[in-house]
Image 1 (cartoon, one colour):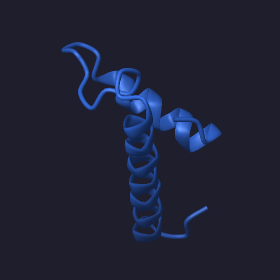
Image 2 (spheres, rainbow, N blue to C red; image 1 turned 30 degrees about the vertical axis):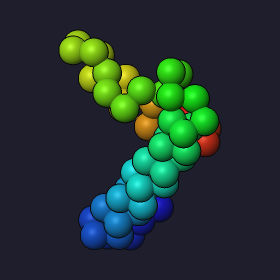
Image 3 (cartoon, rainbow, N blue to C red; image 1 turned 180 degrees about the vertical axis):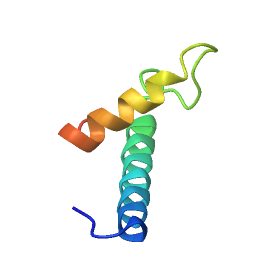
Image 4 (tube, rainbow, N blue to C red; image 1 turned 45 degrees about the horizontal axis):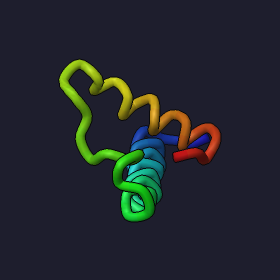
Length: 59
């Protein structure tokens, strides 16, 4: 666990960057299954995708 707010934010930024890299790699493999934009009203899926990645390593 991060000992300070700055450390926590740095850790979270790293997690987001790793998620982006992993997701974009999947886009290259299968763009139909991994869109780069979602329909209106489905924005919450990004957070769901990120949480799955952060907790299970699944994109």
